[in-house]
Length: 259
Image (cartoon, rainbow, N blue to C red):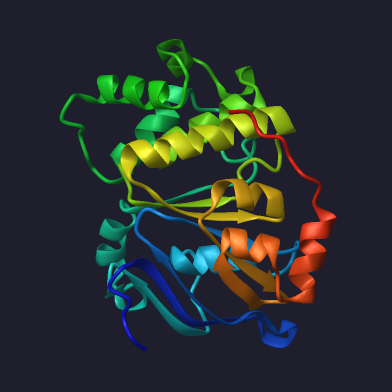
C-alpha cells in the first residue's frame, strides 16, 4: 500500500461488516488531495456516510487503512486521535438535530474550545464573533437559541462550529439536503468561499450529481458499499462509463445555483 505524497486523506481497502447484515463498505480505496473537493455520491444506503465516519474514525473499520497526511489513523491511541480531531471535522445533514436546543449559540460555538482546552489568541469572545461573521451571521446571534433561526442559518452555525479550531479537512455529509434549493445554494456558495479563504479540503457527500458537478473537482460513485467509478468531475458527468452512474445523472434534475 503506497503513500500518495500529495494526498491529505487516503482510504485503502476499507471494509465495514455488521455481522449477518454483510458489508456496508466493501474494499473502498481513494485519496483526497490537499485543497480539493472530492464528491462521494450514491443512493441512500450505498455506504457513503459509513465511509465518512471511518475516515474520521467515528467508527472502526473491519479491515483497511486510513492515513491522514501520511500518518496511520487506525494505529493512534486516544490521546493522539484527540489531537488529530482538531484537524478534521464534520458538518452533518440535519441542521436541526445537530444543534443542542438548550444551548445558546455562544455556548455551542465555544464548546470545541472547552473540549480541546484551547483559548484563542484574540480572546474567546472576539473569536466567536469572527466565526459568525465568516458564515454571514451577526454578533447578535450569540445570545439566541437554535429554534430562533431558519434552517439555512442553523447550517451556517454548524459550519462555524466545525471551523472553530481551524481544521484542514471537512466532511460535508449532505449539508444542504434538508434545505430548500435557494437556501441550499447560498450555503454551497458559502462553502466555496470558505474553502478559498482557508485552504480547506472537502469530502462532499451527496446523492445529487448536478450539485457535485458544481462544487467538486473529482467524484467517486458508490453502489452497495463499493466504488463503481471515480474520476474528474467533468469527465464522469459528461461521459460516465458505469450504467449506475448514468442512472444517477438521469435521476437528478439540473439545479440552478445562486452565484
